[in-house]
Image (cartoon, rainbow, N blue to C red; front, side, top):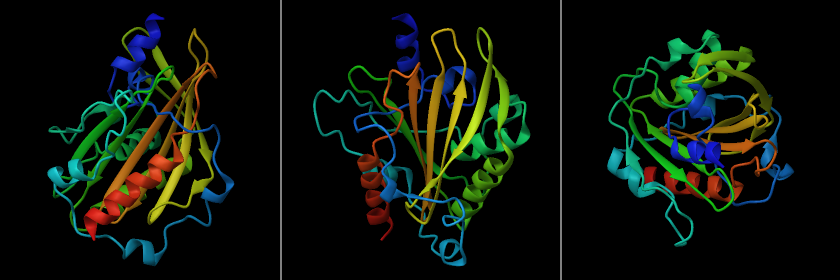
Length: 244
């Protein structure tokens, strides 16, 4: 149906209403394996996590470390290098904490030196697809950006932002943090639409100098809501190898 095409065609970050309807991923069973989950308290940043920042990766190295397309019917988009690193979309979000959370997760926050950022989009048959953003920071930039994600998530619960035809109204729900990389968080943003609720799941992971954000969209309860855990684990492993 028409709105489904619009969702899969869009590739803008999720905190601009239409973008929240665009980012997504599928291909694994629903739900989150208990073995991969931890309480938010147990996954909080520790001195060892802060000390584990690794050497930064270039855009070319991030492209090489992105998930490979393994089957001809996967319909994955090529990895793209992002040129523009800073955006004013944070100012379009009604709650500053939510604006900080989403801008940091999508690597739109200013940082010195500027990070290398690549985006990857995934589409699967009969599902709204998925997306990932890989951002590598110099110095301790990844630690600082992930701290902004965690800080924003601590208070962000609802926000509004403009969209082409309506106002996007997102309710944020914090999920148990998965045990991934050096530190990780997971949350969902739910927005009402005329075709049913749009639920975007975010999994944000820091591994060394890289912050990687996975997003998955479920429309009206008809799609698998979780980004495939096996793909997340594979992507993190590839990034760890690239930094070793």
